[in-house]
Image (cartoon, rainbow, N blue to C red; front, side, top):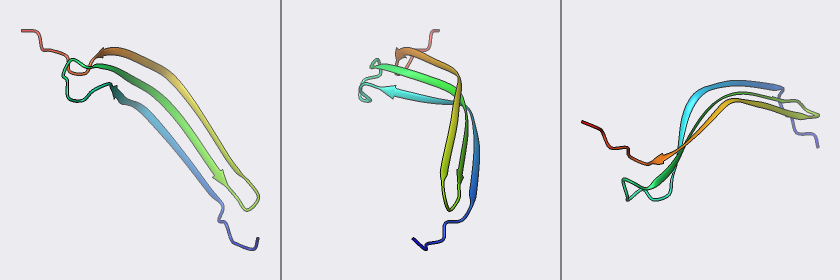
Length: 72
């Protein structure tokens, strides 16, 4: 294969995203899982190889209703 693949390095740091998984979006009290974490990602490519590394830290998962009621 004579195609040219450039050398590339990509590094990303993801800090405290909030990811929500909801069972049913039409119900306010539907069960949901909320996840947050920190992640470091590194991707390197060259003509001969590709390498990816990722590390996840401080993973937190909370089960709760999708929309929590405000207490007065």
